Image (cartoon, rainbow, N blue to C red):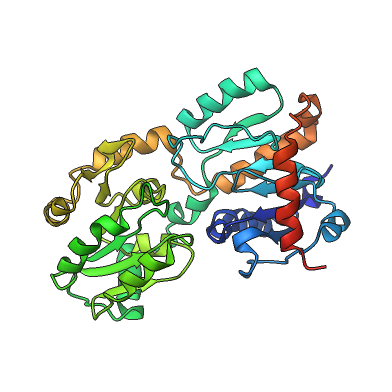
Length: 355
């Protein structure tokens, strides 16, 4: 099959997934190497897709995609096409990351640590393939879509911040067990009138009561933003504060100071604090020596994402084309039945369809 005729379907179940797949769509469009349609389900169903959208199983069957790309763990098994997992983040250390759901034909890994682990599992299971590609979401970063000074100026202008003060981005995770948002609320409230600009960017699944508590703190140099794509905010920030969220690993690509609260893994990537009282000293330390952890950040990226050329999307597309051209998916063993998961997926799609 000529890869210029490939039909791609992008399946998303979370609002933040659009920015993960959009660079792949851009590469397909730029190279005129196929067509793209989107299917949004679950919590992403009410958000606009950055392209033509499909809204029913019947429409998927009519489109008959060659490839279904997914930045998540599930995909309708009954849809046609090669099922490709491109991951929702770089945090491969989290519990359950290497649980194989049995729905995917290809895992596009982001770096050598992830690749090594998936290859071991693939050798045992024999029902999926692995190709190391890098993570498409970061392509715009390495293509220098945002310059620090220009993006910082834009954020300051857009959110009416002070041009004289550094910008601090706070982006916590959402699970109650891991989020830093309740613990750091008082400390951030005390610091909001200090010599900093604050941008608060919550996960789309953050508890609404927590979101409201931070919204009450809004003032001249303190704002809570609702945009889905966090990268433009990272690009214009001097420092980022987070916890166990995978956005910590995305921010490493900008080589700027990172502060984590009770991080679980790779604690050396920045200043990891254990108590809210440590936040203020950590901020000042970061501003005084922004390059203190630069080598650590580089070392971490070599493990999880050693691709700085902005071509991860193209590597994903090439990996897919190689598999389809050689029929490698036909040599895979049969996947596990997974009756419960398959039933759950059918319910998700049924609720998301526009008939």
